[in-house]
Length: 295
Image (cartoon, rainbow, N blue to C red; front, side):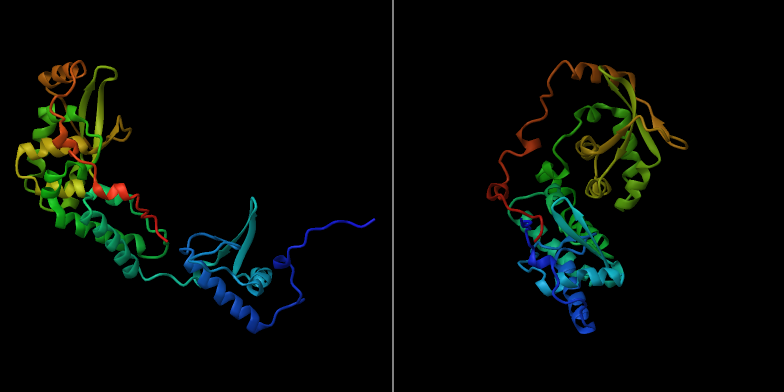
């Protein structure tokens, strides 16, 4: 009575040991495959990346390459995983990755998108200097677009503004006075690290908020010219409510009139939020369902 077995030829090596040349060739192929996968923590041994799979010979060499300390192998569910040592990886040139991001960003903007839409672009490539290179392109684009881009397309600042903040005179005038002489977005962000604001909600009551502008929002605040500009931008800023660490932070208290207005606002719908705030048309580029998640 025989024993039925399922054979996987790719997991079986016909050679008890591979030559140095064979192992060297296999290692080079693994390095190339890791790069094609984006040089992340690990890659799937049997997957294709950019249409390329590891050869059977290289797969047979993987256990010996692991024994030599070049990589690690393990099973994750039904997948065979390979982690190549970082010092052996062929890293991408950050300038090339940044150029790829710029191309995709320009495509989004040229097809009617906004700066906010650029957060939906993902480049699945890992490596030294890549995040910094992409951030530099983001900054350059933010400075080129400036506040005028947000004035024309408010969606550039985000999609869920907290309109109660524009009716908080203490907040608006504090931000206006503090930022009107700041020309650098980094200085604007540094300012918000030193201050917190009292807010009021009928359901929650009083709470303290730390406002956290994005880089583009900070650029817009640095370029703001009037109190109306501040009232336009501030509702879009991210926030952290009731932060624990307020040591050395100035807290700007609400004025009585602002508290009454906040309570009243919860009873009446905001009539100022019209089509101009959200954009009258759907962005044309979204209709094409374009995938910007990388190769």
